[in-house]
Image 1 (spheres, rainbow, N blue to C red):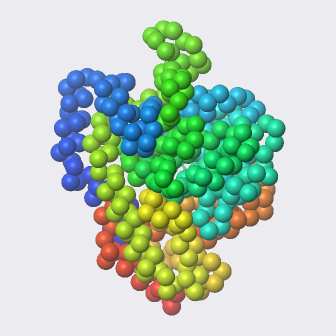
Image 2 (cartoon, rainbow, N blue to C red):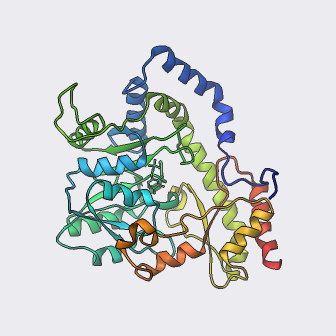
Image 3 (cartoon, helix red, strand yellow):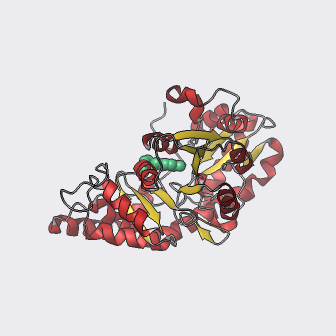
Length: 379
Ligand SMILES: *Cc1c(COP(=O)(O)O)cnc(C)c1O
């Protein structure tokens, strides 16, 4: 194993933090000086600012994105036994949150081009117990808002967006988190907007729902020692909110940088399409914020996905797979389906590869990645 740093790392967070280091240090110093650590001023400011940036009225900060979904579903009135439709092709946390909310997860397959939930498949999964759908705006691309709203209205379902990978993404005039009844975000460090640990938020235009969410995250207490809900302790730390307040004004620029990097990849990869290297489709133009840049290595490729990943690593190119095993094939969740139940998701999991993507990734590095892919064909 080589101990040299990779030529092109998968992500580089220090590149993002270095220019704003003193701003962040000052914000942290202030919180320490004020001793204002839980449910403080910085949190209130960030909740308002992030919700507003997403085109929504209320934000409620919680401990992580998973809690934002689980508590959010509870706040939406989801009860034990209610069925919730979600994509089989998602990060496991979407599923975990549904189970945490005591709902019954119903997985559906994805669109093979965009890797997003297939609403036609979702329609066939509806029963009299279905209460909600969780579209996951995967990789930074939103599920079509107009199609979602048509679908949810037709079937009388709640839309609860998992926007953990889609901070300020746009499509059809909507921002991520502004389509449905409520939406969940994660501020895990490597997300497009990340803090210095775990963090999450629910956003909504529904004042009552926001109020219930504030109660749920704080021991179920609307005021001290009065417990009206069976709640929990899940709050976004004021220190983390202070960091996020510093970072939020840079988010649009970082998202634009990612988009430009994706366009450069698209251009350079175009000639490799006939050799089975196909980027996951972008149907939302500049509104895709490319949390991840994912390519599919189809049967036409001279090299299989796993071997390509190995060859790239040998050339100093770090890659990832999001995600290698679908939810229903994970040991803990085998009751949710068998191999073959969600064939398009299963194929994607075997063929996708996430290339390096972060704000500050240079054109030269992108060229190195694509050259390394071409070189791996011949070796
Ligand atoms: C990151 C992520 C989550 C969970 O967020 P955490 O803050 O890690 O709990 C949920 N859904 C998706 C799609 C994610 O990418």
